[in-house]
Image (cartoon, rainbow, N blue to C red; front, side, top):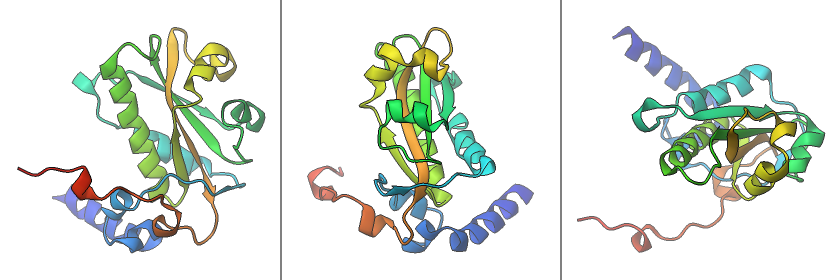
Length: 188
């Protein structure tokens, strides 16, 4: 009972603190109103916020609770630009890796994708922009594993860019268009 009361208080306080909740009320707003940011600006993310964002990935679900991932947080601008050239000062790249070549084990890839989505949503719930990248992964695995400090035997699976975004940005003005639900969903 105490846990639920505390959660209710925290979520109630959070609704006013995070602009994403104001767009579509309640905690579901962070899920409904997310978008892939492309309007990042320079500015450091406080270490406590970055840790909370990574913790969301650590708490992601995984098949048989294996938690196969490793998170490498890249804050060095020169190194981050080798991976995502558009990275700005203060942005962080979170590289999610798993044992193997990053292509053969479907369950581990899915697990890492779930961790990426958790990180992506947590960043936006805290008021930051986030964007998931898979395009740079081959380049990371071909030549940047040691520069990034990936654990031995691991390959990058996905990465998330997190950073500050332009003032006034919201999911309505920044989101790309979506296909109509009627074209993609069947209810029986």
